[in-house]
Image: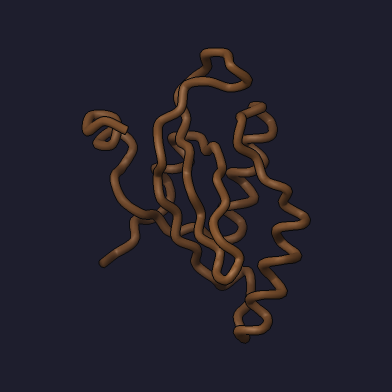
Length: 111
Protein backbone atom coordinates (compact mmCIF):
# COMPACT_ATOMS: atom_id res chain seq x y z
CA UNK A 1 0.00 0.00 0.00
CA UNK A 2 1.51 3.36 -0.92
CA UNK A 3 1.42 6.42 1.35
CA UNK A 4 -1.30 8.19 -0.61
CA UNK A 5 -3.61 5.16 -0.45
CA UNK A 6 -2.96 4.74 3.27
CA UNK A 7 -3.74 8.38 3.99
CA UNK A 8 -7.08 8.03 2.20
CA UNK A 9 -8.22 4.90 4.00
CA UNK A 10 -6.61 5.30 7.39
CA UNK A 11 -3.28 3.93 8.44
CA UNK A 12 -3.09 1.72 11.47
CA UNK A 13 -5.16 -0.79 13.29
CA UNK A 14 -8.88 -0.57 13.84
CA UNK A 15 -11.20 -2.10 16.41
CA UNK A 16 -13.89 -4.50 15.23
CA UNK A 17 -16.60 -6.27 17.16
CA UNK A 18 -18.04 -9.59 15.98
CA UNK A 19 -21.00 -7.76 14.43
CA UNK A 20 -18.53 -5.72 12.33
CA UNK A 21 -16.82 -8.89 11.16
CA UNK A 22 -20.20 -10.31 10.15
CA UNK A 23 -21.10 -7.15 8.21
CA UNK A 24 -17.73 -7.09 6.43
CA UNK A 25 -18.14 -10.76 5.58
CA UNK A 26 -21.66 -10.29 4.19
CA UNK A 27 -20.53 -7.36 2.05
CA UNK A 28 -17.57 -9.39 0.75
CA UNK A 29 -19.89 -12.25 -0.16
CA UNK A 30 -22.50 -9.97 -1.77
CA UNK A 31 -19.84 -8.26 -3.89
CA UNK A 32 -18.06 -11.54 -4.65
CA UNK A 33 -14.72 -10.30 -3.30
CA UNK A 34 -11.84 -12.77 -3.33
CA UNK A 35 -11.31 -12.96 0.44
CA UNK A 36 -14.35 -14.21 2.27
CA UNK A 37 -14.70 -16.23 5.46
CA UNK A 38 -16.84 -19.13 6.61
CA UNK A 39 -18.70 -17.22 9.32
CA UNK A 40 -20.54 -20.12 10.92
CA UNK A 41 -17.41 -22.24 11.43
CA UNK A 42 -15.31 -19.28 12.50
CA UNK A 43 -17.95 -18.11 14.98
CA UNK A 44 -18.11 -21.56 16.55
CA UNK A 45 -14.31 -21.73 16.89
CA UNK A 46 -13.96 -18.20 18.28
CA UNK A 47 -16.81 -18.64 20.78
CA UNK A 48 -15.14 -21.79 22.10
CA UNK A 49 -11.80 -20.00 22.58
CA UNK A 50 -13.43 -16.99 24.22
CA UNK A 51 -15.52 -19.16 26.54
CA UNK A 52 -12.31 -20.79 27.80
CA UNK A 53 -11.07 -17.27 28.62
CA UNK A 54 -14.36 -16.27 30.29
CA UNK A 55 -15.06 -13.77 27.51
CA UNK A 56 -18.28 -13.13 25.58
CA UNK A 57 -18.23 -12.88 21.78
CA UNK A 58 -20.40 -9.77 21.49
CA UNK A 59 -18.30 -7.83 24.03
CA UNK A 60 -14.89 -8.75 22.62
CA UNK A 61 -12.85 -6.28 20.59
CA UNK A 62 -10.79 -7.64 17.70
CA UNK A 63 -7.79 -5.82 16.21
CA UNK A 64 -7.85 -5.38 12.45
CA UNK A 65 -4.95 -4.27 10.26
CA UNK A 66 -5.04 -2.98 6.67
CA UNK A 67 -3.04 -5.14 4.30
CA UNK A 68 -3.65 -3.40 0.98
CA UNK A 69 -6.06 -1.50 -1.20
CA UNK A 70 -7.32 -4.13 -3.62
CA UNK A 71 -8.85 -3.45 -7.04
CA UNK A 72 -9.66 -6.90 -8.41
CA UNK A 73 -12.11 -9.71 -7.80
CA UNK A 74 -11.90 -13.00 -9.63
CA UNK A 75 -9.15 -11.50 -11.80
CA UNK A 76 -11.34 -8.62 -13.01
CA UNK A 77 -10.92 -4.91 -12.22
CA UNK A 78 -13.42 -3.62 -9.66
CA UNK A 79 -13.97 -0.73 -7.28
CA UNK A 80 -11.18 -0.38 -4.72
CA UNK A 81 -11.69 -2.12 -1.40
CA UNK A 82 -9.48 -3.06 1.54
CA UNK A 83 -7.88 -6.38 2.25
CA UNK A 84 -7.67 -6.57 6.03
CA UNK A 85 -6.35 -9.00 8.59
CA UNK A 86 -8.43 -9.57 11.72
CA UNK A 87 -6.68 -11.09 14.72
CA UNK A 88 -8.70 -13.71 16.59
CA UNK A 89 -7.30 -14.82 19.97
CA UNK A 90 -5.78 -18.34 19.96
CA UNK A 91 -7.24 -18.86 16.47
CA UNK A 92 -4.88 -16.79 14.32
CA UNK A 93 -5.83 -14.17 11.78
CA UNK A 94 -8.32 -14.15 8.95
CA UNK A 95 -8.17 -12.10 5.77
CA UNK A 96 -11.33 -10.36 4.62
CA UNK A 97 -11.91 -8.02 1.71
CA UNK A 98 -13.73 -5.04 3.19
CA UNK A 99 -15.53 -2.04 1.72
CA UNK A 100 -13.38 1.09 2.16
CA UNK A 101 -16.16 3.20 3.69
CA UNK A 102 -16.94 0.38 6.10
CA UNK A 103 -13.24 0.17 7.02
CA UNK A 104 -13.14 3.93 7.66
CA UNK A 105 -16.15 3.61 10.00
CA UNK A 106 -14.34 1.35 12.48
CA UNK A 107 -12.66 3.12 15.42
CA UNK A 108 -8.88 3.42 15.46
CA UNK A 109 -6.90 1.51 18.05
CA UNK A 110 -5.57 3.96 20.59
CA UNK A 111 -1.99 3.24 21.64
